[in-house]
Length: 473
Image (cartoon, rainbow, N blue to C red):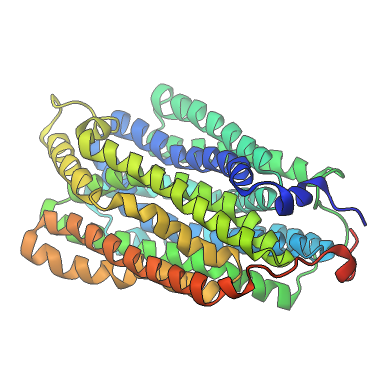
C-alpha cells in the first residue's frame, strides 16, 4: 500500500524544514491557548478589579487539576498515534482516535460535573475566602459545567496535529481565540456579566473549536477519521494511552500543588494581593512556556514517527533543533520580563491612580516578574528534554524529569526560603528550582544520547516490504 504523502515527508524531508513546518502552526496554536488566559485576565483586571484577579489565581489549581487529566488522554493518544502511523499500523491509529473521543467525553463529565455539588467547600480548601469567593465561584461554575466540551476539543486538536495536520490544528485554535476575544468583550465589558461572562466566553469559543475538529475527522480525506468499529474501548490500548499520557498529567497535577504552595506562602506575606501577583506573573510566564510547548508538539510527531521507522539519526537531530529553538523563545521572554516588567503588569490592572490594593498588586507583581525570570533562558531546553522522552514512548523518564522542576526541587524551596527572605524568597524559589532541574535534564539527555541512542544511529529504517501492511479500516 502506498504511503500517505504526509507520512512520507516525516521520514524524508530535512529536519530543520520539517520542524519549522510542524512547530510554527503548533506555536501559533499554543500561543492562542495562552492568550485565552491573558485576554480573560486583562478584561477581569480592568473591569472587575484586583480581588477578581486574586480569585482567578486562587481558583487556578482546580482548573489545573482538571486540565491534568484531560492532558493524559489527549497527549497520550497523540504520542501513540504518531508511533502507530510510523509503523504503518493504521488500524491501531483509527482505534486510538475512537478512544480519544469516547474517553474525553466520559472523563469530562466525571471531572467537570461531579465536583460542582461541593464547589464552595472545594474553593475554600484552596484558599478562596472573603472578597474572592463570589468571583471565584461564578468563574469556576461555568468552566466546570463546560469541561466535557473543553476536554474533547483540546484532545482531538492534539490528535489532529499528531496525525499530520498541524495547520488545521492551528486554525482551530485561532478560530476559537477570535471567538473568545469577541465574547469576552461582549460579556465582560459591554454586558457587565463579570466572572460568569469570562467563563461563558471561554466555553463559547471552545464549542466553535470543537465543531471545527469534528468536521475534520469526519472527512474521508483525513489520514485517520471517524468510522464504525473504532469506538469500543480496549483495555490494553486505554492502559497504554494513560501510561504515555501520565507525564503531562502528573506535571499539571504537580503544578496544582505548586500553585497552592505559592498562594499559601504569598498570602502569608502579602495578603490576597500576593496570590493575585502570582496569577499575573504566572500568565506572563505561561505565554512563553506555551510557545515552547508548541515546539515540543511540533517535535512529537517527527520524533515518534521516525522512532517507529528506526530512523534514530533523525530523532537526534529533531531533538537538537527543538532545544535550540526553545532556548531562543525563553531568552526572548527573559529580556521582556527583566527590562519591561512594570509595563507587562499594567496590561492586567489599571494605572497607579487606583486604590491601595491595586497599587500593592502592581508593586509586588513587578518585583516578582523580574526575579522569577532570572533563570528563564535555560528552561526552554529543559521543557523540550522532558517532553522528548514522552514523544518517544519513555514515560517513566519523562515523569521523572517533569516532576523534578515542579515538585521535587520547587516545593522544598518554597517551604524554606520565604522564612528567611519573605516575599522575595518565594520568587527566588522558582529560580533555584529552574537551575537544578535544567542541570539534571542536560545530564540525563547527554547520557541517553551517548550511551543508548548513539548505538542505533545508523540502523536501517523499516520499509513497507519489511513488515506486514496495515490497511485503513
